[in-house]
Image (tube, rainbow, N blue to C red; front, side, top):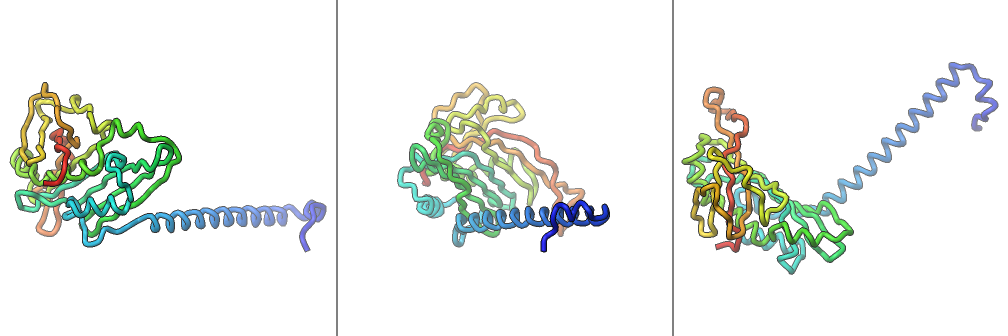
Length: 265
């Protein structure tokens, strides 16, 4: 039988406190159970919306076949409606002239219709690469096409980083196992407001679709479209590094580097 309110009032204070504590603990456990179920559902949905790109890692992700596979999975036939929001890429000095990509993240939006947009993320590291649909929004996002570069021309642009590496290794050496970080967080990457980042110490560098690398004067105007990045370096701390462990310095901003968009060569 349950305890009536009248019976509860007649209980000694110590028993009242115990009953109240049991009620609070029970309610807290119920809330935690609901949160756990919610997180489990979110985790399952995330796994269902994640596709592993077979036989692909960061070192091999910037290839034409990978781009075509990504577009196929997303299911967008109109290339102008799959847009690149931002990207981050890390290249390691591995003792070669081209370095090796160790991390890549690209956020995209797929304009399904005038009132629906899907958000996708490409993530690649040294072990694997995945494509994940993170969100679907019921709103008109078509205005982004005026500010964001289409994925099918942006992705090949990033692949030109191998052409830029000899320049970086010569002009901003980091030592073997040191890192170069490329970040595109420009609000408008079709017409990026890069000028405020360009100084005598942090010059503008253009990488053409043919792989030519040029350091440009401040007053230069962009005539072609580029994938813009800000390049920071992490040099190896030779004094603290050992044969088993590499110690890196803090990131230091060095260049604004633009990769000309276009097709894979």
